[in-house]
Image: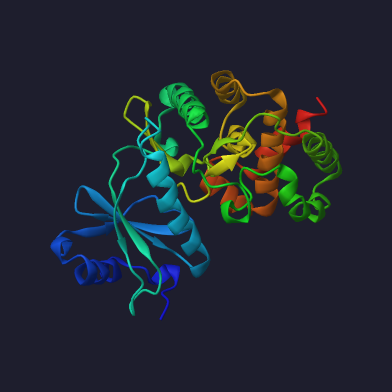
Length: 294
């Protein structure tokens, strides 16, 4: 039996923990408020979490994430999840799952307006530090990273037909952006790429200072441009400029980052874009359409 995502309940998690880690069977279990898309997460007592793939297709990402966290753990000063134990597939849940330390903090969505600039600066510093980490042993970009870290043209086939569904002005502007972006390439050495920089995958304290990055399922070594998509998907122009100043990456990387944002906006529904990234799909596409046309 394989549980569907809606069937992953606190009761199921309790039975899994009691069966495989009886020393924690008396700890309370409750779902976290902000759930991810690929995994379901539950608090286990006050100090741990349980992370379970929501579908069979996300199992490889969970396994790969554990391996990546083990590599980065000694190289990255910003807090990242630490794996405490790995649960095995069973009759009740036919996928591996993970027990990790709980990291306290608020997601970017919960950061107050006056603290957002501090949060953006901290995120930029964290990504710059990640990019500077030693890449020895890091996983290469490719299909296993959902092509994060690859050249943005790797996802080009998914957007061509969708461009035709936009109104003429947006279609022309977005196509010009895409054509300009795919003509550029990362010329530096491969660097660490988070792969899913989104409001729910970063944590901050009450003053807006970054405390952790989480969700490393698509993390790899390659072109960092995909991490820059956050600047259009979740940031105001002023916040984007601040992130730009902190990261100090080549302008063509930002152009490819905009193309990654275009891809994400076009393959997602308006509801998905707003829920995951905090900006309306229309606003994102308007910004991107204006980027190369002025």
